[in-house]
Length: 420
Ligand SMILES: *Cc1c(COP(=O)(O)O)cnc(C)c1O
Image (cartoon, rainbow, N blue to C red):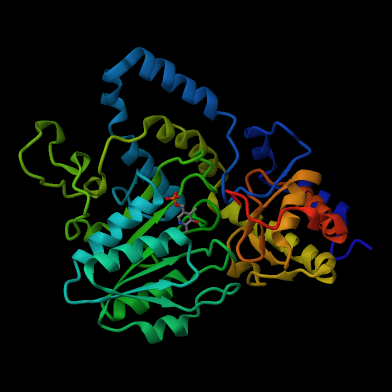
């Protein structure tokens, strides 16, 4: 009666898991709680609190302003580590700063300024809202045409749709490498190639990919990218984002927010803006040091585990979730809302159910399963390979099956909460 796989088999997967010890390096205050929302906010690494205490008490409390001698280049230093271990980029191509939305604005603005005479911007109509809104704003301000490419809610953007939209009027294409809703994975190398053939730039949003799937920005010919550090990278709520600009492009581009952190000889405080030639020209302002500091212990864990091993486990975790959902949940009105082949998706899977929102609430309140809901009717199950166990996925799907079979879940409010 247990469907695709027994709990004992999930226990065996845990026993054979080469990353099993990493769970102990995160804070788990309630072992009963099954946390499957690491793709929204990663867990707190055990080393982070002590590290922050040091930075607060010794750096800020003791060192005061003198600590900036050390702090000043942390964004670049951590950017280089991210480049090497997570993004497949070269030193001097990645920096941590601002938020994903703001970095998207900066890099999209820079790319548009560098493409006079081209009047079209392409986006995925189903992309994460901030990406659509930022590009809507930029297109509106510049009188450009924003084309929203129709894409499949579950399968992602079809390459043929993109191919037929690309022409010499396209300045910029903005896409997510892993779709926030379905988890569908883009073929970055092919997209970059198609865009390059018509002289368009591609700006990638790597928020749901960084730290979950292997990325090779160099080999795939990527030119521009941004992404979060608080999802699979576990940098903490609102931790600053990263941006990537391929080396060859850095001096050609100039971003629209001319802050002093991009300035040559910043402390000479010269009369006119004259940006440095390197990646720091995409910086704007004084970094939020405490949030930046929290990224380091988180990155230690990702580096030690290695993205290849994280991905290998992620494939098994999402396959387990998908198999169990097929066996147990399809009879209860669910349907897979992600690509069915594990290699075609990131680390999370989405399930369609007409009452997904109410089921999601009941899971959190009555079954100690935290996953999330995304409009219009999707439940997202986001195991994070560094700390999610196979038995947790098994137990969570078992609890979804119980809740979904209970008629009481529909007593929950149908109106969305402020945060979902
Ligand atoms: C989470 C996420 C963001 C978040 O942007 P913020 O500026 O940090 O709020 C942006 N893009 C995508 C694709 C995301 O998944």
